[in-house]
Length: 158
Image 1: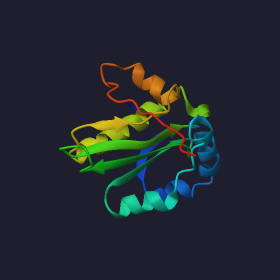
Image 2 (image 1 turned 90 degrees about the vertical axis):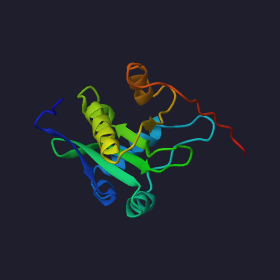
Image 3 (image 1 turned 60 degrees about the vertical axis):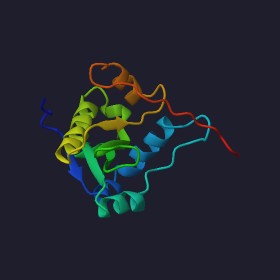
Image 4 (image 1 turned 135 degrees about the vertical axis):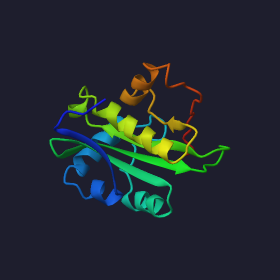
């Protein structure tokens, strides 16, 4: 699987994503798509939290670019995670802008995070996706690779 010459997915530091001029618009699009009907809108990704996860060696960031413009990102938390006997990876964020969808950039972003998890010795990878969202729909289309094993239920406590 190769990208077109104008597309690139690569590991990067959190600061590179957050300092990119396109990040503000990308994060706004992410928040709009990831609204939780129970607890409200998603927050923008938190630069300090991403950097803290990188510093302790469990957070890994990826940027997805088309023609040099940031149009997608992912954060993977990997290592010995609570509830797993072996090292495991959890995709905390994975998003590609609407304008870049259909280009297979999201598929390449998923492949990059999965390659990272394998390289770290993880036994598996878990994705969290908004119900009915683009990522969930993509995962449901591949039952040979992605199995829905859990459901997450939210309750507003206010």
